[in-house]
Image (cartoon, rainbow, N blue to C red):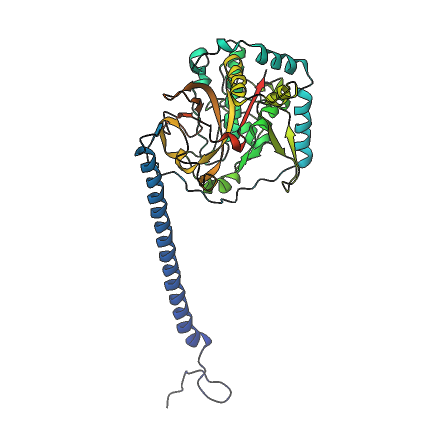
Length: 413
């Protein structure tokens, strides 16, 4: 009789391995988990697809309302990269000590002679010498930076892009066209501790950084080129900003192909930075501590028996543009703005305007004009690239937006 090779336990019964029992159960559980995972992926993909379709339908309806309105002063074109207003949770940390230092510096600027002379020039310039329409690209045609349309890509850097654009424009204008370099948005984004980051920031702080720390050259071939991806949309959704924020950093050296100067020697400086229009500034990390920023209009109002009118304020802003070059402008962007194609932009309605605001945005003002109905508009360069809007440029009537506290910033060399 052959001996059995069957393994037996102490009682003499056959001994089955654990995996003989567990393996089928484990395979079954894995199969169930896989089916459930695939089902969840499918359900989620359907939800995302449904959300995309619903958003597209909603945004297409906005476009139709603009284009079918006989009183509309602008034309819209559906932009598949347009965003619907929602809370993207973009919150930036604040260094109260550092911000307070910048704020104190802004106050000191108004004590300096260069600022006092600047305000005097703005007030004494003959109003009748301001043209009905104006375009900085034409007056300073020897300054190519004014016509340059940047693309901020997947970073919420509009504040830095606009401020640095103003800096390049004014550097060229002040040099009578001999200094034509672009400045580095990346330098502000990475190395200014108080200006902001890819989740947003303050152009006034960026211009103050120009005074304090200086700016190096930018553009593709300059000291510090812009590195953020632009393939995520025109414009990119704020949803991608947090991920791209992770790659932001301060690099105090020039790229290898730039041999004109070392980083420190490549710096260009301004003398003063300032805000044109009354505004506040958040100082504390919790957002509760705020202060009123000293401004050109605010200073003028202190010398008047009554505050100057909106038309007089616009005259001061026009004079600033006409004599010294582009400024920044911050304004709330409603959903329909992202579909702008041509004409003079106005919100489709003031009703539920706040519910349609996607984000606050900063652009570069380069001129002004009058619409067919005689209403004032600003001419501005956006930071979404040349394929957006009217070759990257747009006209905007801000009459219904003034109550939100639009911000205009600049600097002098």
